[in-house]
Image (cartoon, rainbow, N blue to C red):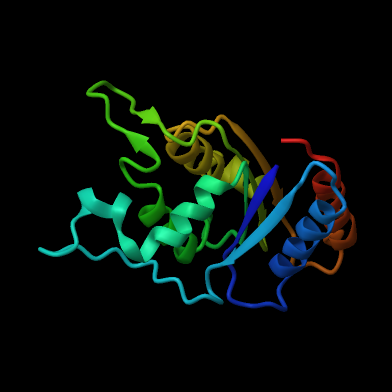
Amino acid sequence: MNMLLIYAHPNHKSLSYSFMQQVLRGADENTQVKETRVLDLYEEGFDPVLMFNEEKRRRDMHIDPELARHRELMLWADKIVFVYPIWWGRPPAMLMGFIDKMFASNFAYRDKGGLLPEGLLKDKSVVCVSVMKGPTGYLQLWLGNAHRILMRKALFNYVGIKKVKFFEFGNMENPKGKHAQKLEKVYRYFRAVAS
């Protein structure tokens, strides 16, 4: 299995970065993982802003030469892992901009003229590892599970990805937030995950 880890946090001293390290540690010890590649959106200076004009059209995003390397990585990967914080009940703008650019028509899905498109990324699986200041139940109870609905239904299912796993860790700015246990849980998952 080839694994692509997409990291979306500006600080390499953050708790999100610690979770990324545990994903990599677990994957490194997993015999099912042939290779892991990391796409650090902030470190590479990814531009999340969509820009359309006469030369750059939305319908041509699937062949945009600036995104060719990212498309190759997405196609190469069997499992795509996103590590990011939850800010204001959703992933950061950097990750949302990456999604806007990468999950384009004729790359991630193809319109068939019906209600739903044909998902072109259907052979892949996704894991989302997210951390937040508020309690874990905040997303489910207060926001009606908006984060999972956005990521699973509005995005991944739409492009054909049905196998989606979430790790949503709350209370992460609390000294009693059980950081070590949560980091260990992520490490153990990636050490054992098959596909």
